Image 1: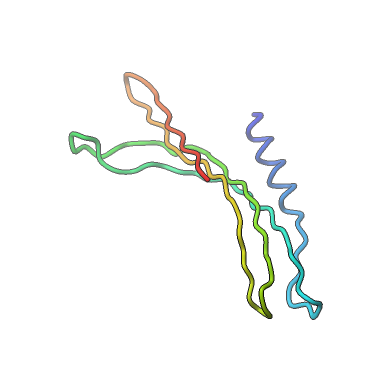
Image 2: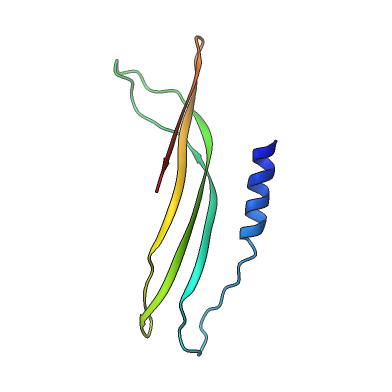
Length: 103
């Protein structure tokens, strides 16, 4: 329940960003906050050749991006993004979860 509330709150907060397009003002440096939810699954074959039967795992992505003007209509956009993906394997014997997080 806490994760649903957290993701709902983050989505609500991140949806209120201000955007400005096609203005005649001189270009300024701008910052962007990026966020979202991933529903990821890892696919492939097991070592014995059987197809992997995995369930989706909920993840997230959060990041920032900077837009730096170099010339009219030419921008440099460095940024960093933290992404979380993974899978859930539920078998008769056990349940396992694999989570991957990377920048």
